Image (tube, rainbow, N blue to C red; front, side, top):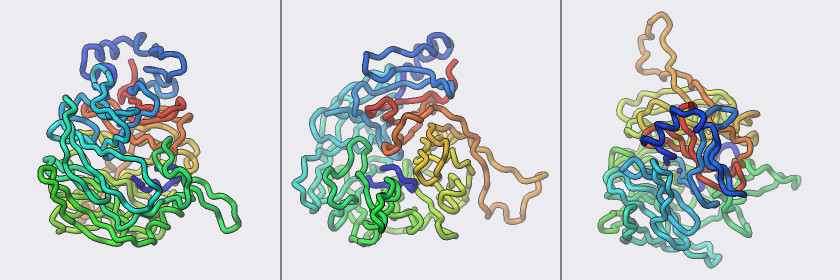
Length: 457
């Protein structure tokens, strides 16, 4: 999906022995943990201690070209020990305790959408090569058992895409566009498969090529200004019935169902972030359309929003202004309370995420070309939130109506110096909050990795 990354680069476990006797042995045996597990010649290492951080990193995928899901799409089954990833020619399951990778369904053109939060099924589509036409094509959505691979057809949409499933797995959430508009005009290859996004290119008026980042902003703006009619719709999982939730000529994107409220939707107005009021909520019946964040200054940006696991808070990247002051902001859907956690320039990340218990946050870093222009930002980060207390215990009379300030205490987990950030790492916490999963090309080919939150030994 063309989610905007305001910097520029581009646009999921466990690991040996999570919760197992093998895991306990590894944690109590530093000598065994510290020695890298050898991989066959030409393959990336399987298991090592990052010498710059002291954290254990493991490679979860066996095959080059494997990928984890986008950062807000659920890839974990309800059993809490299975991660779904895509592997060449298959949708596969990674056992979180043994690290075994098992293909579930195989075939060309499989697109994993997300794992169901309740049934243990997962949802996917099959694509076929295009004919070069810019006209939208029909898509059939399927569900399959992650245990047996038995498939069933959910329904077919004449055009559009599916982005989320609700908490009780009764509805899918999709978006429809009246006509397609490639983000990179006249591109010979469309999306660059190495980086899961378009191969952006543009030039300044004097003919000088723009950076990848600036070119992406230009192409996103072209799409925004086209004002193509769009719809957000739901698709009934049992009957395939399609219902329109919202219509607009804004660029509607980043669709997400609440992980706990089956009727609550979050979506964004896509485009260059400083031009759009990005984050919105709405109910499945079309009521309750609400703007979550209102800009207060020119060049303020907010985005890459996600729900907390309990569904109570929407978190997002906030910069006031863009590229200068960096905050992870939260909005409580029930109370309206707002929380702002400050972080430093090098700690800014393409995507942030929160642990399932809400106690920790993580970031996947960014390179010097991105929005933060961070000189040393290529790291996977762990963040421990810390509230800023009232001085001497004295509260302002209207303190409860004000933003609750705080800071992130950061810890570096993985050195990403060799990673090309045109492939976004898209970090997620495992269900037990002990590992952070990400994708990377740090060893050349794309693979799925995980880093342990606790230091090795």
